[in-house]
Length: 510
RNA sequence: GAAUCGGUAGCUCAGCUGGUAGAGCAGCGGCCUUUUAAGCCGCGGGUCGAGGGUUCGAGCCCCUCCCGAUUCACCA
Image 1 (cartoon, helix red, strand yellow):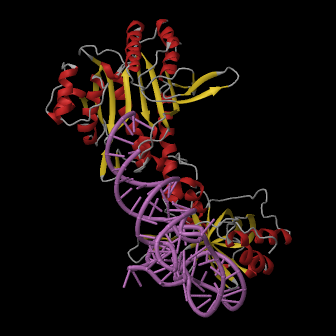
Image 2 (cartoon, chains in turn orange, blue; image 1 turned 60 degrees about the vertical axis):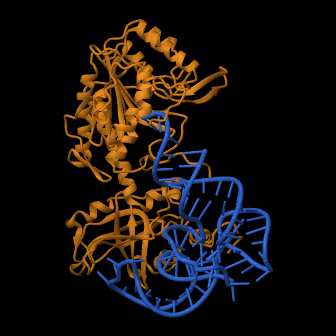
C-alpha cells in the first residue's frame, strides 16, 4: 500500500488503494456518462421484461441500469448484488462466463465495494425463489466510493414483515450527513418527495386562480410583518445594517398597492430564536395576498387548498399523524377565539380590562412576566388551554386588536380584528387577516408597537415609513395569509420533528 | 436556558462488583455458477466524546467541558 494516511480508517485506506488499482487496470474510476435505459422500478413493476433464459435470450428485451451496489453475495464464479437507483432497487446476477474472466475476477470481485456506482446491461429473468433479477451481460464501473456506507439489511420475516437490521439510526449523524441518510433510509426520500409535491400542489392551486408568484427581498433595512427577533447583517458598500426577513408581508402588500390582484411567495424566513422540535431558525412560509377579498373568503380558500394537498398526497382527506387521524375534509370548524377560551376555561374575556384579564390569568396559573399586555395575556391563556386540544383542523377567529397590528378592525366586534389562525395537531399552521388598509389606523398601530418596544418588548414591530407611504397611495380591501410549510409538511408526512422535513436542519458545528 | 438519557470498531450494539476492550454486519485472504441478513474456513480493525482526579489498576467511580436526543420554557 502506497503511503497510507494514518488518519483514515483501515477501510478508507483499502478503498483508496482499490482506486489506484482501477487506474492501473486502465479503468477510469470516475467516467463521464452512461446511457441508462430503465429505472429499477420500471423493470420490477413490468412482468413483460421477464424471460425464461432456458428458451434462449436472443430476443429478450435489453435493459441498461445504473446505480449503487448496496449488498453483495459472491458465490465463486457467479454473484448476486443489489443495485439501487433513484427509484428503488433491483437484484443483479453476474457471472464470470458472461462478463469476462478479468472483468469478473479482477474488477467486480476485488475492486467493487458497497456504495460504488456501476452500470449493467442485460436481460431480465426470475430466480428460483421468484425474484426479478437483471442478468448482466455487460458491466461498467461508474464511480468509486472511498468511504464505507452504513450497511443496513432489510429482511422479510416469516410473518411477511420487513425487519431492518443495523439501520443507520443515529439521529445526529442522520441530520449532519443527510446524503447518507437519503442513500440508506428509503423513507427519508419519500418524506421529502411528499414535501415537494405538497408545495407543487399549492403552487398549482394558486396559479390556476391567476395569482402571481413573486420574489421579494430577503435582506431588508427594516424587518416587519411579524413579531420576532431578527438576524442582523451588514452591507459593506453601503455601510448599512440589514436584517434577514422575518416575514415578507409588508412587501407583498406593497405589490397589492401596485395593482396585482393576487401575489404569493414561498418564502424562507429567519427568526433568531431557539431550536426545538417545532422551530428551526430558517423556515418556510407561503404568504398570499388577494385584492378585494376578506378573511372569510381566505378561510374558504385555505380549506380547499389544504384539502387538495391531502388528497393529492394520500388519496384521501384523512392523514395519519402520530396517534391521531386528521381529516382535512371541508368545512373546518370556525370558532371565535373568546368562545374557544370560554369553552375550555369557563372565562369569557370579551370586553374585560387588562387588570381583569391579569387576575384570570393568575387564577389559571399562567406564568406572568412584566410588560405582558392584554394581547399577550390572552395569547398565553389560549396557547395553554385551547391550542393543544385542537387536533382536527380548526379556524380560530377574531383576535384582540392588541395582538394584531397589521389586521383590520372587526366590522362588528369592538376591540377585535378580522384575523384567523388555522390550528391543526395542536399547532398553528396558518395566520391570516383582512389586511389593514387604513393608513391612519396603521400609523397608530405602529406607534403603539413603538411604545411597546420602548417598554422592553423586543419582538414589537418597527414603524416602516415606506410601507405607510405605500398604503397612503391606497390599498384595496385585501385578504392575506401565511401558511407554515414546514409545520404542514410535518403533518402531511407524519413527522414528529421539523428536522425530519428539512434536508439540512441547523446543527451546532461538529 | 433547565431536567433526563446517551456518545465504545465503518454501521448497530454488548461490556458484570473497577482487573489485559467484545459480537453481528461491513473489511481482508481462501472455497463456492440461482443467492437473498447467502454459506463455510481463517485474519485484521479501537484517542471507549475531550480533559482532569481517585486508585496498584478506570470504558466503568468523581469533577469540568463538548456534542446529540427527548421533555419543559419563548417563538411559526
